[in-house]
Image (cartoon, rainbow, N blue to C red):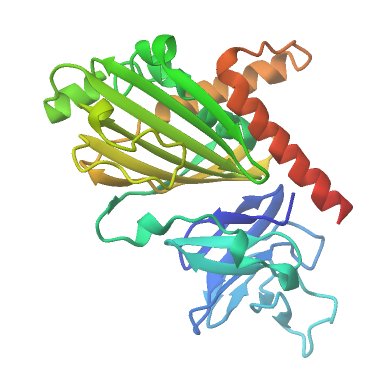
Length: 330
C-alpha cells in the first residue's frame, strides 16, 4: 500500500529502504523536504545517500547530481544531462518532528489522512522519541501493540505483571476507519518498575487504550491510578480521552510503523508523558519479534492458533487488508 503517510528520520539528509524501495531525502535551502527514490542513472544501481551540495544530492558512484524534483542537473564531463536521467520524487511534509512521506502520486497527497499526534507539540507533555529497526513484517509490530497481554510476560521484570494477562478486562471496538482495544486491570499491585520508581504502594487500577488506523498508525493511551473507580466518567474507550489529574502515570504513545521489506520495518515512536517519564523497554519487543519472524521463515505453513486476546489483532489485520483492496481498485 503506497498511499498512506509513512515516516522517516528528521536528519537533513538520510537514506533507507521504504516499501522495499531504496530512497533518500534532504532538506533544501528553502527548508522544504524532498524525498526521492534512489536509483543511479547508470545500471539502475541503488544510490547511497551521497553528498548534499546546495539543493542537490551528488551520487557517490558517478557524481551525477539530482535536484528536489528528482531531475539530474549535472553529469561530470558532459554538457547536458540526459532527459531520462531522473528518479521519482515523493510528496513530503515535516510534522511532529518527523518527516512524513506520501508513497503515492504527489498530486494525491492528503494531509487529512495524517494521524493526530497533537500531544507532541503540547508543552504540558514530556516528549521522547526514537526510531528502531525491527527484523519482522510490519504488521507483526502492529500485532504487538494491539495485543498488550504480552506485557505481563515479555516485560514482567519492568512494566508488566502476569496478572495483566490473567485478569485484564478486554473490549474491542471496530469502526469504519479504525480499531480500538480497551484493557483494564483493576485493584492489582503495580508492576516492578512503577513500584520502584514512583514508590507506589497498595493496589492500583491500570488502563490501556490502543487505536489502529490502517495501514500503519497506532496510538496508545495508558496510565495508572490508585482509585480509578471513584473517578466520574472514566470508563472511556477513546485514545483521545482525558486522564484524571490524580493518575500516577500517564502516557500517550504515537507510533508509525513503516515497511522496509517483507521481513523488516522501521518503527518510529514518540511517547508523550504527563506524569513521570518511563523508559519503554522496546528492546525486549524487538528480540521477541525477531525470533517470531525467524520461526515463521522456518515453518511458513504452520497453523496459527488464535486466542481471545487476538480479537483486536485480527480486526486490525482485516482493516489493513481492506485498505489495500480499496487502493488496488482505485
